[in-house]
Length: 443
Ligand SMILES: Cc1cc2nc3c(=O)[nH]c(=O)nc-3n(C[C@H](O)[C@H](O)[C@H](O)COP(=O)(O)OP(=O)(O)OC[C@H]3O[C@@H](n4cnc5c(N)ncnc54)[C@H](O)[C@@H]3O)c2cc1C
Image (cartoon, rainbow, N blue to C red; front, top):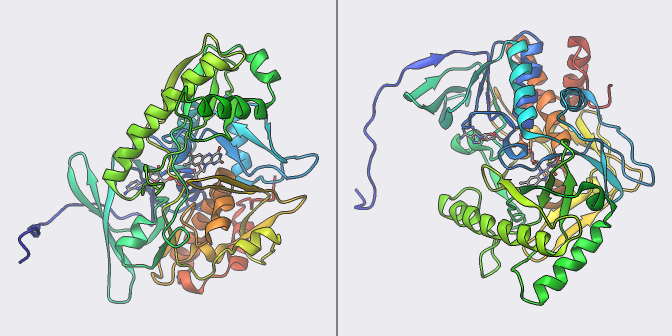
């Protein structure tokens, strides 16, 4: 045996659950998937490595719901379904601000704690069994490719679950990858850059709200060029939080000194990104305090619990969402959701934004179905999409929509005995109507 390899001893582990559906990941997609499956009466287990739901939105502090609104002169909410329901619940609990302008469209800043509470309450009411602090480790299929066993690392040790159907909402296509399913990684291996998001308090909000956002960009460029701070990103996003006293700062851009992008799938790269992200966040917060009107008394409240990772693996699905589908506002008969969100590609050198004027495109359900695994569906940002198409489709409202459709589809697998690869998006939409699950355009 290779001297640098240690062979793990084989051992028995307890089987702790046999749910009808196991959802791996409690981000926007996983939450929606678990809710849809539970609402049609399935026995659902949701497995999440952190102690709360929200994923990139909460742990990564991405902090706003993008993708609910149209794009054009008068953006208005056009995406509803589970995304709309969750937004409305956040708003009723004081956890969502009024929608704010973002270029030609709008987004909704939200509060992370209220997000966690809202997700907990929804899951409890729907009867979903939730297992936090449980990391998915491995998956095993039988000879026909049917996924039989998932292995989890829980606090008490390694355990197994044996679900009838699996939804991979890990963001990273972890389950599909462990099963040997095909995945891609960015455009020829180049993914979008990570960002460490942070919040600042002590802001003079009326003054902040009067600012032209592009004025902050101009000040950042001047301060960076004068060498006073290290501010690698010049097109920055600042949003008022629902509490009316804090500002969410999406300002940093993390790449290695040679310009390459850290991988969200490697611990050493993530370590670099966390440390570099905190260092940049501090520099940007100092820049704000010392240069930007309204920030003179501001202070940093927190950074994300983890650095924000925009992109890792995408599955190779039955269908791929192409860049042209987004740009040409393509429509598909079996859409899991739809979107007017721009292509918003955060590259190591620049940020590219392409708006869709008064247009929307559809995300076909088949982008969530891997090529193998009759009881396996994906949901969320690991959908099968070309690089720039993903830079649009990955936002929160669409992840909710994809998750809800995937959760509904799991009912067709479990109750009707269908195979994932034989499902069509049209069938899933019809089933959602029959089961009273709202599709993304339904209020
Ligand atoms: C820096 C940044 C800024 C962004 N800004 C915005 C924004 O302003 N508005 C917007 O709408 N979108 C924004 N996005 C995009 C959006 O947040 C994400 O694309 C979206 O939340 C993805 O949802 P998801 O459910 O597919 O995946 P995730 O949110 O990544 O959820 C995956 C979940 O799976 C869990 N998980 C992963 N692996 C395992 C495992 N092995 N075992 C158990 N659990 C596991 C994770 O902990 C996580 O909770 C931003 C993203 C980033 C990174």
